[in-house]
Image (cartoon, rainbow, N blue to C red; front, side):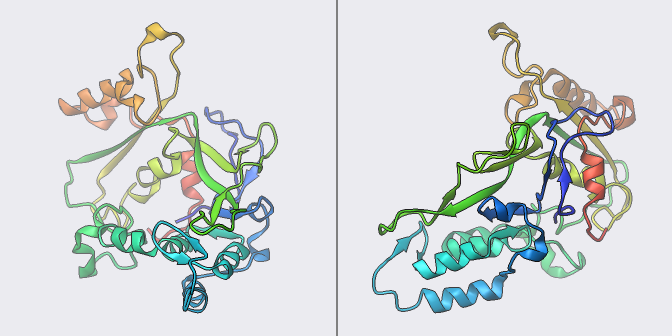
Length: 299
């Protein structure tokens, strides 16, 4: 799942949000050098799972000396170079990259979690527990009186994608790739120290936190076949003005939001029987609705 290749992160509809006056290709999760993070997709090579498997077979076989070592596997200098030559990895092939760089870790992870998008949610395989944590590979139950709330903070720069480079070290056991901390954008841009930032709660981006309630589950979709009601309640981050304000009373940060007075009030009201309409319906400060509409996914 990824939005259209270019997202402008400033707001144009009066909603509060991060004021970043530039375009960024946020569909790219990892880019090798700053230029690759900005080039049109048509100018980038495409390296998928089959190509990575060929690199793994041809480059990692018969290694007499461990040239470069990750935590989980051996990689030769040739395979590292070929991975970096691809220049950019998006939501479609970044998982293939992680499988290649850390195969043992991914085998353990994929035994318990899945990261795909279901083509047929009625397929019996989706009854396996590893799919339950992925809302794009499971569907909501027939519970017409139930409501779902997406409650999350906004207004804090949050990591979204990264500019990497090859590690300069050739020593055995060195980490093959590292974030290029010299990659910066304009002063008011979203690229800082090799990291692209977006609106979020400092840990989770707005798109990850709110997409399902904004579009994936909203109305009758294949992920919400019985039309369960959805509500988005966003909490604009306000850092404490002084040490005496306490921790989190108006915070939208990932952990401190647990002390946010407005969130606690919403949770208490729902727990004693209030419905979404009585809370005031959606409360949105970000561009989540506009961003969600740009995502092309079968609903």
